[in-house]
Image 1 (tube, rainbow, N blue to C red):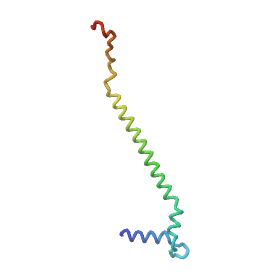
Image 2 (cartoon, one colour; image 1 turned 90 degrees about the horizontal axis):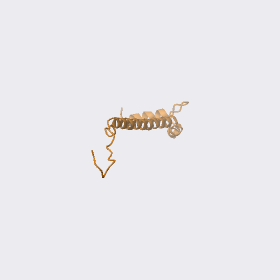
Image 3 (cartoon, rainbow, N blue to C red; image 1 turned 60 degrees about the vertical axis):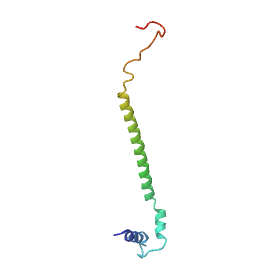
Image 4 (spheres, helix red, strand yellow; image 1 turned 90 degrees about the vertical axis):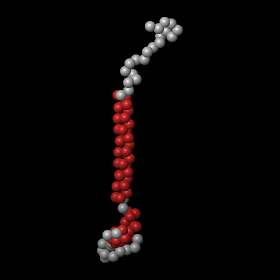
Length: 90
């Protein structure tokens, strides 16, 4: 089945009049305009995609920050203080 066959089958199925079994012109567009389910599914998909993307970004940033902080050797030893800059140094 190619795309043209699929399109014709879908057009006939969407525009089929239940009473007489005939196709009314314009009925396809009426059903597309009224179809709210597709719009809700698309919005839900985009919402969850954005939510999961933001969540994974936050988790990644937190894990990278935590790993870098645990490997940081800067603050293990206090810095040497020169209390007498002009005097004798031990």
